[in-house]
Image (cartoon, rainbow, N blue to C red; front, side):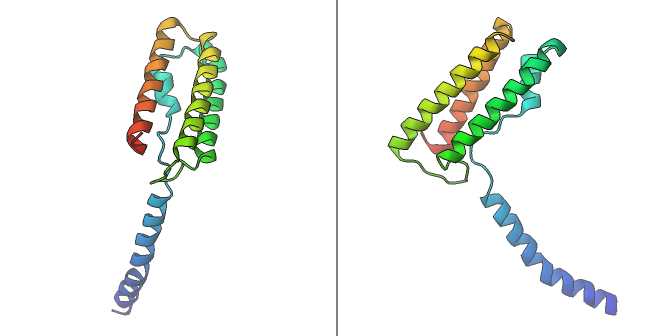
Length: 133
């Protein structure tokens, strides 16, 4: 009986703490679309020969992209951006995308590049939806 009382007391004390922790985690989630590296490799059908060159470039792209979202404060749920910053953000993202595509063009086949373009367009659409752009 004493054990049951202690267990119930602990549950009553800990449940609000757990709920608060979950709310904090949800509020700190990034609002921009995440790039799933494994999914990208699968969609592009990356060969073992391409893997050694492709993976470091993709990881570099993801880090640079995440840095841009952080730079403009768009890495938090409910973030907003001024029109001026939006133009700058868009310009920098386009430069990043163009540079990445140029690097990938030496590694990927034409059909893989088209699929990469599709993935990029899906990400752009998700960004527009997420921030009502």
